[in-house]
Amino acid sequence: MIGVAGGTGSGKSTVARRLADALGPDEVAVITLDAYYHDESALALERRAEVNYDHPAALDWPLLLSHLEALRRGAPIQVPRYDFSAHVREEGRRHVVPTPLIVVEGILALHDPRLRQQFDLKVFVHTEADVRFIRRLRRDVAERGRSAEQVIEQYLATVRDAHDEFVEPTKIHADLVVTEGGQNDAAFEQLLGMIVQLEGAAPASGR
Image (cartoon, helix red, strand yellow):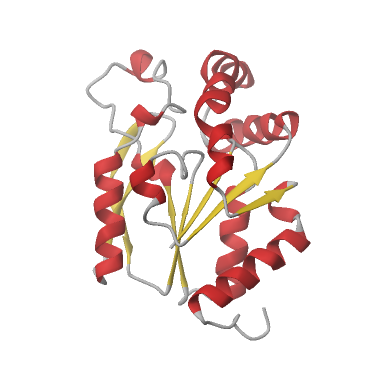
């Protein structure tokens, strides 16, 4: 079980996808912390938008931890699906079965000590702040139904401070720091080698 942390837009998802491609879909399951935001449907939409989603309190840690423990026992889980435009959980769930390698990625993947204890390898993806902001801006406008102004306001109001307080300090817990995001081929090969050695598996042929 591997934790992949880093700031918003750092390239965590890219690292996770590259691992799945390199080792094969039957070897890797990816769990994203974004799926474990609390359901805020009890709040008016305007109030939901004011919640600090980069704060640890925004996540359902007990559910996440119970799911990871279930996967370790060999039991499948039902991962929530989250509607980022409405800030609520959707009705459907994503069925995830245990695989030899579980990758847990999210900005706070290395924040909670109970979660860190689950990981056999801890990774922090580091990318400069201006690049991360541009990536978040593009993603939130294209995929999460937000205007550029809304993204900028959220970044200045909560995202930047939360990164400095809760995300960046967790770099100290990492076994490997991947610089330049998910496109750093040398760092990725080093990570892949560590994983292969850890689980005794070989990359899928032709990948």
